[in-house]
Length: 116
Image 1 (spheres, rainbow, N blue to C red):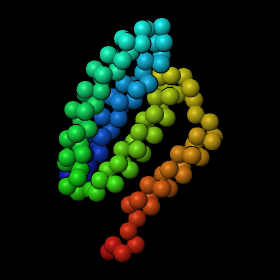
Image 2 (cartoon, rainbow, N blue to C red):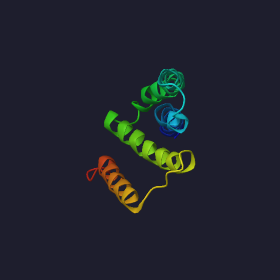
Image 3 (tube, rainbow, N blue to C red):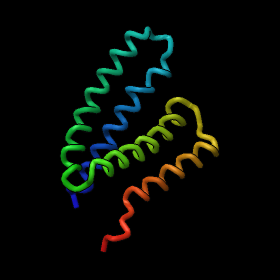
């Protein structure tokens, strides 16, 4: 059970770091671009410290396509909260509808009609 949950927990943590690395600087647009880039690289280092082990461990129990799907769903969930909470840009109905379609696609990624 832990072998299935730990990679997801690590991907969750890595996505939090990466969301801040990619979008956190948008709250500080007065900072020079070079500073934003260096700060993003620094944050991304910690993201990789979680993401690489997550994928190594996760590939023992999930296919790489499933791992990527898990990562993308986590990214959307984290970004939705980040956008609203940190950047103050709430999501609209069409964003939720688009996310729902992506979750439906993720369901199909894990659906195996031949599995018992």
